[in-house]
Length: 269
Image 1 (cartoon, one colour):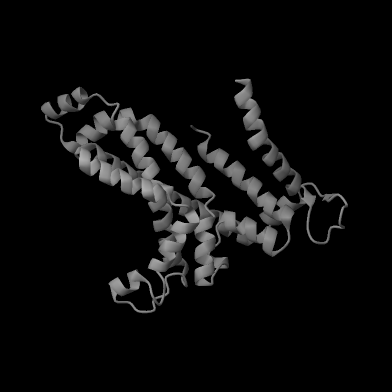
Image 2 (cartoon, helix red, strand yellow):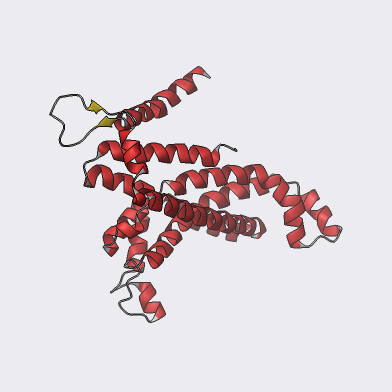
């Protein structure tokens, strides 16, 4: 185990150590060039915890993450069941489509969706007969579009993983339940779901980790819509504190909170 532990210590441990160093020091543009940053202890944490906006952004992030995870798992499960039921040719076609969506970089995917919902030239406005409707100008519709993008990019991983699990379930168990009179919903609840439960726990934990720290989709859509304060999530909030306000210690403190929060959300697994 030593080589794997060493790699993890270097790749994960050192960045976390540096993040902790940033969080307890006063880094910023006021720092004298070449001089070490002043050690201020938990002052950065006290500042963000005393900021009402931080708590608003935190709960907004939790709600957005929960909505994304629930939709991703539900849709991904349905797509996995669909893949299991399809014939070989259609399964290859659907799998290829999912791979293309999964392989697309988040920035490229977000820009494509941004143009689909564009105010002047967007396909969605043309389809709904709502000319010049600003999807990114209001927080509710902003997060609706962001939700679509995040879920669209997360479904392929869940679908492929669960489909792999479905292929390991003996057909004889499902056929026996069918012969005993179990309907499709009952077969899923009493036969398929218990055997997929460990895999569902894994993909749910990973989805929580990914969706809680979403950054690219929110940041790009904010640039398109011109609103930021009402649509900040923790990842963007930490970035704006560090880069926009030159408070690198405060941004690092927010990032530390994100790390601890994700550990709390996934500690059960």
